[in-house]
Image: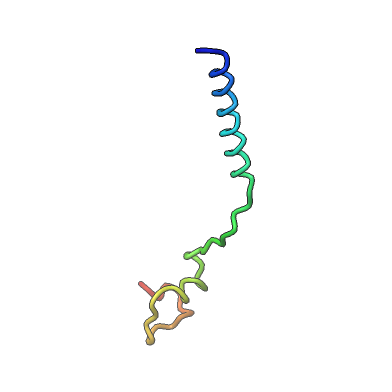
Length: 60
């Protein structure tokens, strides 16, 4: 391998590593929906009109 191609590969590898680290540092603009939270569960799942929404273990 010539010196020029080795230098090119080193530069390319450096750019890939820098780009990956820069991407990981960026804040992600999305909210996580925690389905385990009872508030979200009531709004996401189908509701039975006869079911008490505040009863513990309503789906059992």
